[in-house]
Each structure stands twice: as C-alpha cells, then as structure tokens.
Length: 170
Image: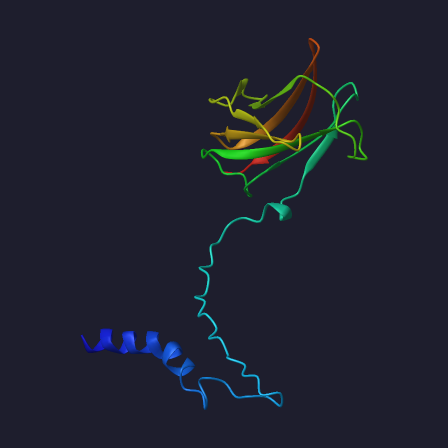
C-alpha cells in the first residue's frame, strides 16, 4: 500500500510544482499588464512498437515477358517467412523509368516451385490501392527451396507475365 501512495504522490508532482511559482497570478510588466502563465500539459512517453520498416525492404523489378510493362514487387516483411502468410506490394509502370502507370484490366499474383511441379496451397487476395499499386495478401510459401514469383497483367484478353526466382531457406 505504501508503494501505491508513493506512485500516486509522484504522479501528482508535476501539478503540485506548477502551482509553486513566486507569483501564481503573474507579474505586471512596464505597462501594468499581467501575463498569466498557463501550466504545460504533462505528456506521457509514447509506447515504442517494433514494426518492420517497409521503406528499407528492397524492390525486385523486371520487365514483363513481351516488354509492355515494367513490374516491381516487394514483400512487406523480410525475411520472407516459411509456412506463414505474408503480403506483397506490387507496382506496374510503362517502362523502367517508373513514372507512368499503364492501363490494364487486372493482375494476378502467384508463386510456384517449378522443380517440384506445384505452387502455393493458397490463392492470395488482391487489393488495389488508390495510387494504382496493389497488395497481394496471404502469400504462403510452405516449404524451403527455389520458388518463382509470378505477376500476370491482364489487359483486353491478353496476359503478360513477369517472374522472379528466389530461394527460401528453411
């Protein structure tokens, strides 16, 4: 109980000391005006939360197979986890200057293990952002080894693919 009283007294210390100035009403200046000092609010320190900084995760980029699109992607966590869902950010451009965004109907994001003859066991959900970029939510690479990430651009009945190989350690 004594410990709780000590904590309560320490918590009140800032408000007690704010009222202990020489002249709580303020003091008149040369013109006779009185300036009243307002107490400053006590601000608690913000809790520090350890979250990944996406800006530090490198983009992987490549032209699509026929060169109509320049596509880049990056995982939103790094390293890419094995057997745990993760999200991928995708951006499309007309060329490697990465200035102009092309017109297209939609995209598909997938991954597979060509040496094993299978892909992911899940289909990620795609969300288009207001700035034209995409997020593929729920990517899941369930085993270690060589994976290929596929991003297909669908436009007017045509499909064009960009793909990357990567190694997932386990």
